[in-house]
Image (cartoon, rainbow, N blue to C red):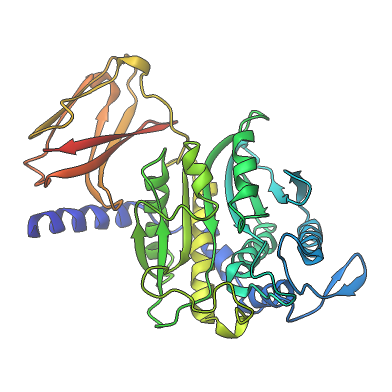
Length: 399
């Protein structure tokens, strides 16, 4: 066990050494303002009036069956327009409507990274602030809109605000099957849902992830950004991740996604879905850190054209073989390829912890992993193989 820990520590340290801060990402993080974040929360939760189309109003509830839901949509749309974004919307039923703000990439306009949150809320009372669930996430997306508008990115960035998450993820479920209809490629999605509660003041946040497409790679990038940009969150990796919010439809349709949230298991917000869910319950320092983690991860991905997190593709078509699986001690990989590209293999446990990494030329046509040599215990693991333009993840079982 000590040897495994030393291997993991060495690999993590190597990752940190080989990945330096992106100055533009750090500059972007320096632009984050807590007063701006909390101002959005106050406006969306009814603590502070908003001006919509020149008229002063108050959003008393964002429940999908109230007029406040439409007011919130119009207010958020207005903010994104003010920051200069291309706006799109998607009405998926008579009541529900998603909102999108789009910043087109200057190099890869059809390759997209997304940051999203749901804006509808509970309970059904006349006054329903829904500050943590989920004005916190919606405000993080709005603040991202303010900050990211001042920067340019090679990849397109989409800010999404989902409706009708509370009655069953209806907004995101309706949207995800449309991905690719405009010849766009979704590179990765980051969801934020409930970021303000930290009752025990331990600064621990969840990263929800599942071994789908390149989701584990996204999770690893978020963990790396937490270290590189000194965000100072304790990260609790939840794998398999929570399926009750808007990252789940992405996983269910084989897209790369993670969810950043306050810690649900050990420190759940007792004011959830009650009229007492207000900004006054927030741990403001924690809220800002969670927002910064989302921004750092999104910006780091959208600016990086070298270590690209891409969509899953079948590697080398039907010529790739991985066997035996389950494996008692050695995993053999065979393929046919005539090019000379350098590829990278990474092996993870079910919690997304990287245990092994190797680089090789595709023209070598084969690779062997000695699972006893790297002290793998019996269980389920995942192998991800990264090419210059894509990646593929395979599940393996160690007997």
